[in-house]
Image (cartoon, rainbow, N blue to C red):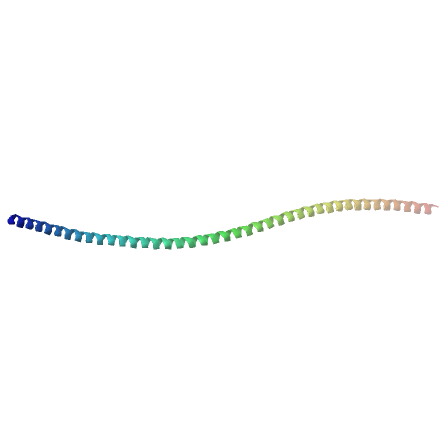
Length: 150
C-alpha cells in the first residue's frame, strides 16, 4: 500500500507541476494580453485625443468663419439698405424733376401761346397803324388837295 500511495503522491505531484506550468503559461499569456490591451487602449486614447484636438481646431476655425460671415452679411445688408435708400431718394428726385420739367414745359407753352397772341396783336396793331396812316395820309392829301383847290 505504501507503494500505491507513493505512486499516487508522484502522480499528484506530476499533476501539480503540470498545473503550475499551465498556471505560469496562463499568467504570462494573461500579462501579455493585458499589456497588449493597455497598449491598444493607450493608442485609442491618443487617437481619440488627437481627433478631439483636430475637431476642436476645426470647430474654432468654423466658428470664426461663421462670425466673419455674419459680420460680412450684416455689412452687406447695411450697404444694401443704404443703396436702397439712395435709389429711393434718386427716384423721388427724378419724379420731382420730371414734375418740375412738366410744369416748366407747360409754362413755356403758355408763354409761347401768349407770345404768339402778342405777336398777332402786334402785327394786327401794325397793320391797323399802317391802315390808319394810309387813311390819314389820304385824308391829309385830300385836305391838302381841297385846300389848294380852293
